[in-house]
Length: 58
Length: 152
Image (cartoon, rainbow over all chains, first blue to last red; front, side, top):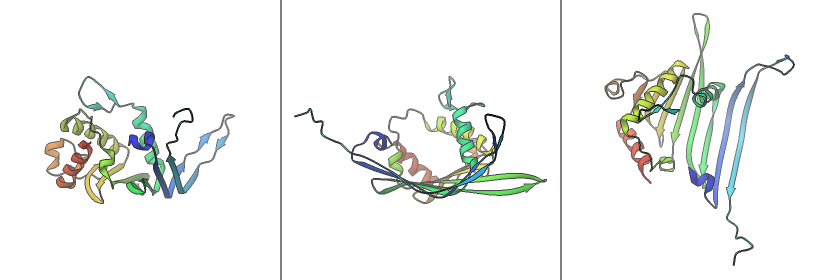
């Protein structure tokens, strides 16, 4: 797993497919009721690590 | 998780990390998450929740399928804990899963290996694990998983 974080020239994708998350009711800072909700997540998060030559190096 | 003088990682009653993990698992009612590394599928998580009415109370039962499509990617070659230490930690974790109505099924490349928690129905594996919350679905796949995790 450490390759995902520290590896170079790595591509990592997390894909969410119809992920339903129940957000519970909560109290706001002024005591107001904040209604609950259901979030539906669809999509991808992609991160790519690339190695670049340091300009100061020979 | 805290190391309590025993060799295995002890899941304490008020473990904030474990509690947070259970809250996240309980708040997701359905869907899937896929992980790809270098365009290769590495892991897939599928979550389903069933609402059961028991004596007028809502009982949410969450089933989490964790499929390690490329298990060697998750290897821990420096792991010092032995099989029985892992089983003791797994038993404590599985007990907490059952308490929270969660079933956690571990698959290797699409084949069931181990089921922990609410819907685990152990038979002979109870002799080894000493837990009612761990079911070894396949000794073959479980052994393969252990080898995958041990490989560097």
